Image (cartoon, rainbow, N blue to C red; front, side):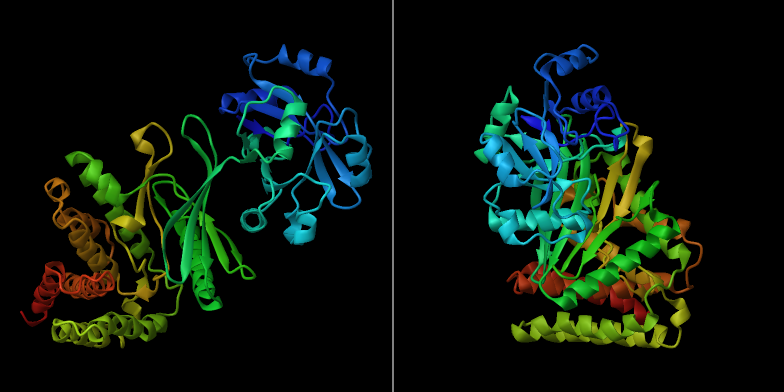
Length: 504
């Protein structure tokens, strides 16, 4: 049973701008099964709720109950469910518990204003739960609550703390069992048979970063109300790199990628103390998944959208990160790829060494003395880092968004194009159901037609970066214990083929 547990009405809370009828009707319309009013130091009488129900277009089973928000000297605001009378402001917790022994007391929005509640308060013996998700929390504060819940195992709820209709019902709570009365609801909270209504899904990460996607308020129709991605970093170095990534994303968004057909996720917070970064989640599917399931026409359209996104970024000719960072980090990255061959004694090590040497020589001769050729790129542009979404039922509202800017540098534009083509080839190698529908040539042709400025030897540069990406693919194959596979041999041979154009 999914309920809104914290909302204020204009009838009985001076801070609210929305009526009880509008709150309850809205929450029903978005798929919730009930609303609990929590006005400040006010308890709705049963007769008052009966009068309200007559104004609503909701079925009899839709639950409308009343608790109250009470200011206490020990914890500040708490939500009290199941008290038989209105409680005065400033009443101590001990008195509330003594007067209403069967009520449930929940600490409201304890993390707001960057508060870090100590564990002894979160586990206070006189309270029954903690509100960890709230519109009164920033996402970083809600994430702190989520971590404390996992660590301390207290009972948690979510509450929107509604004061306006625009965000009503955003943070609901789910109960294991149906309830009919406020007494039953209080009993379920005290028995810990409830939790915030959300999904917490581990996503692909790395040895230095744990990635989790949080979805809150997923209503019955499947329409997601709020989604964000938490990246938990193992050390200060990886967190600092993530903070740099957030800066790049902010700058790109400010240059036309905030909304519309071309997007970048919005960075939502960097918490140095907990080494976490938070960014907006993207509603949609990866380009990889869309290409697998699409028909021929849609597959071509999706691939062209991705190419147009990249050309649009490159056409801005931004230089957010100093160009010298590309040169200082590029050799280190490529040498890391090569090190896997040496460490495992791979029989293709010499071939990989030759590929690396040619790539580095080309980058040095082509770009070191020409930093004006470099622009802010994505750095890891491939089908699994690109999302295709849709804001409404109308296909015209489709958009494309790129994620994972951890490798974004001021770099050669051909780097992103070569990366995409090589990764497309690798990710769909052997998947004829995709390559029979659409080829990487569609991407390249669309990119070239949308680009405002390319070098005369741009296609040659693309071939070099296809080879460079093949080297990175080889590195990951070795990490997966596939160093002796036929696939690694294929990747390296194709890299040599791309580099052969340097001598044509």
